[in-house]
Amino acid sequence: MAGIDYGERIPNNVSLGENRRLQRALEEWQPKFLDWWMDMGPTGYQERDVYLRTAVSVDAQGWAQFDYVKMPDYRWGLFLAESEPGRTIGFGDHMGAPAWQDVPGEYRGVLRRLIVTQGDTEPASVEQQRHLGRTCPSLYDLRNLFQINVEEGRHLWAMVYLLDAYFGRDGREESEALLQRRSGDRDKPRILGAFNEKTPDWLSYLMFTYFTDRDGKYQLASLAESGFDPLSRTCRFMLTEEAHHLFVGETGIGRVVQRTCELMREGKTDDVRRLGGLDLATLQKYINFHYSVSLDLFGSEVSTNAANFYTMGLKGRFEESKKRDDHRLKDATYAVSELAGDRITSRETPALPSLNERLRDDYIADCRRGVDRWNQVIKKHEIDRELRLPHRGFHRAIGLFGEVKVSPDGRVLSEAEWDAKKHEWLPTETDQAYLESLMRPVTERGRFANWIAPPARGVNGRPVDFEYVRLA
Ligand SMILES: [Fe+2]
Ligand SMILES: [Fe+2]
Image (tube, rainbow, N blue to C red; front, top):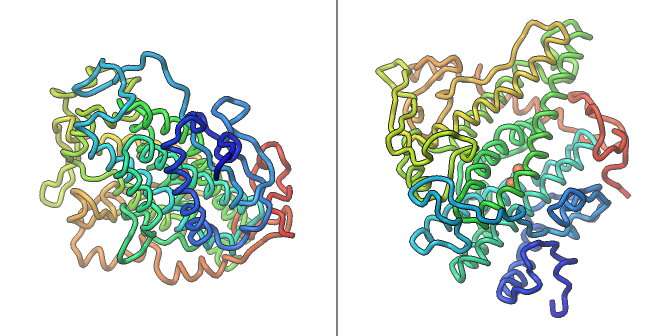
């Protein structure tokens, strides 16, 4: 790639053109990334023109340029949010010191692990979603899927940039390993549990973008507080893209709810499966599943790692800089769930090791807002039903609740009670088979599958029936 114009091929604001070492590392990595993309990225449509937005700079005009692009030609760029001159570390033992522009030697291993764990989720979700193009409910939805896929690809680039630019040879090895693990693979799985689950259908995908991408938002937001400035700036820019993924999830499920309500009214029945729709009871089960596996991503309620990340100044709280306390938390406490026999209570616990739980609480509050909006849709149709988030202890595998069975309304159950009821709370094979029977591709302009309502508006001011993906 001699004589390459880096600004053109790899849009960036990290002075890539002047950094020979980084150029060399990326020149080696990029072809492997493309191989991975062709192998594990979206099946089908790689040769099609897709109406995509590309970030070419971080200012308001540059960060969202829309045009037809073939996915393999997408310009995956490297972007950091603008630097804040004089930025200092905002929490932990180094609070008040200048933010690190280089990796602090004593935290090198921990920091690399944090970046790799975040980085691993990005290609994982592309792998999980790779077969969805075959069964898209509309061209609009297909385009949004591909937008998310290329952006998760860019998020991988963002983490690989940090590894290659700041971690030398170990960083380059980790960058390679990010392309070698595979979602759901028995021998070399992705690092976190939820990223090894299948995303076999569009409802699961919408739930994933609502619940699991939202975990990403909270992880990125707390890494955006990091004292390691390049990580902070990278994550701040990634959050602008993440917002779109969450939008796809929230409006997508909202549209399913809308369509379900329309069918309920038209057919005067709750059983809209007869009308080729998704009944509210099924939607509730998928909420239960995706919410609970996403809650696990925050880790154990009490965690020395979480305390260390904070004390070291590597990972802050959500909106750390807006909080009015000492940002050290050595004497502070936080209420954490506790099991007392078969009762769930809560207890004031030292704040530092409770930071996972605090981040989970922020996440839960955020999840609720979307559920409230879906319930507004149901109410507007004068239907007396509600969707809800199950109790945080429901169907958990990690932490305190991993050891017990808890009902959606928060009662600790015996194994026998759980076994008798779980099919009412979680998707069954029959539910999944029904769902998959609905997954028939709809690729005519402006048409939508029967189980989902059209969106209120199109992308970037285009009409809903725009040719978002050119099929010929
Ligand atoms: Fe991402
Ligand atoms: Fe995302």
